[in-house]
Length: 197
Image (tube, rainbow, N blue to C red; front, top):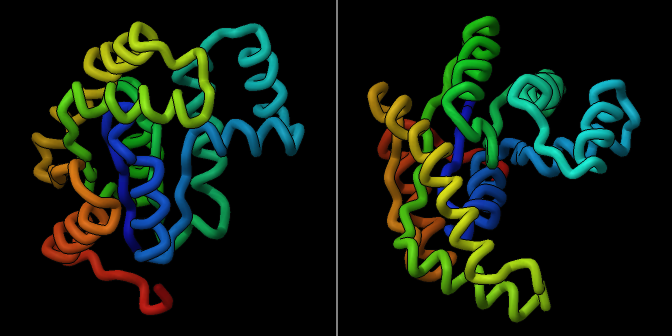
């Protein structure tokens, strides 16, 4: 059983690293965006609520986000563990997750913090915007997203840090180097890779 959370500012590469780490440990990656899209596609009651909120341009509430993630964590493939990406996004969601995991007699094994300097995040996101022709990723928009991360998401690291489960990883370098750093840090905590990986 390996229960992980990956945290990092936009442009830190957490989506890419999350998928790589989940594969190495033989667990599903559970990203909030994917979970929302799947719930909407399935047309479940929660999915219909999410769809209405997204279409109106609003943010999905903490309660609804937590309900959708709980539903996903209850699926069979997440029984042996999971890697969360994009949830919990703030301290309220941390409490929702804790309550859910405690109810199952579970807890997170480690929180991977991908540490990337702010100017590096901005440079990566600007490059991605150019490569993908994303006009919405202006420097102003990127700076705003990073400010939201610093204000709302970074404080969750304080909560998990107090429990001694945060593994801080230097997020600058090649993809393979960063993946290797994460895996060796997790193995040092006694978390072993899947034999199938």
